Length: 311
Image (tube, rainbow, N blue to C red; front, side, top):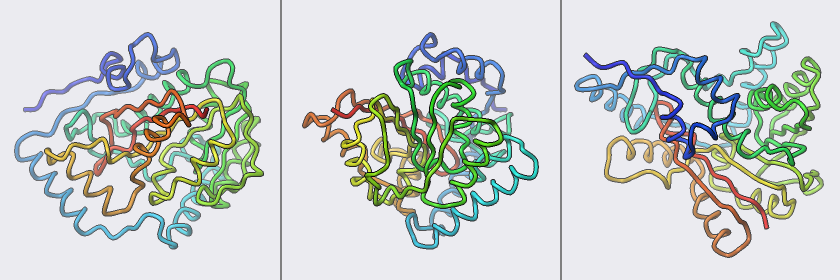
């Protein structure tokens, strides 16, 4: 029989590369309020699950950045918009791809969770810590590019209500949803359509801004350089990203190699981490830092943290 374990604040702080005292009050409160129990898959259950993962990777035909994906994203955020208009419930803006009752990847193991919304809750724990770490008192506005359903921005508005918030995405349904959220919650939140592949330099970012992405650069199919160049010109005070990063995987474990296969087959962005490392080495950015969190969903870890500041 497998042992039920509990992910503690100490364990989470280790995963995030910090200590408990620096997690932030809101982050600690969330950790103490949600069920973070899990059990590792072992023996035949683990073998069967890995086989299932490999079979699904082999048969998967989705291609990141393909033209049809635009319509799929537009339809997805339209569904969240309809749900929110119908019930005005925050739960209705949780992205549909964060599915309940999924087996997760945690510290190099596949795990069952007691809480069906473990991934949603842990993703918010990461967000709250990063908001505390990077959105300091001198930051007056925040820009999320590829904001999707606005779930991240709503979480941010609850803990830092005085910020000027900006959410942009490349499909209109996301922009419409953000405007609906802003109106309903009475937020200082604006939204515009923005294509990260062809950045609009008329878009304004003040010097006391924070820019972040969460699972957005992954969708650029490695065509991220124009967006990074845009940020270098605009010079926000700090940038951070929560993204899948295949360069952090090891090539000597089935656990890691399976997610490397999935990442490459779908065509998620590669090269961002070494590109930023080069910019750091050449003095174009400063305070470059990254941390593999060792947390993810069935097929890959989508929560590696990268931060940097333009020079």
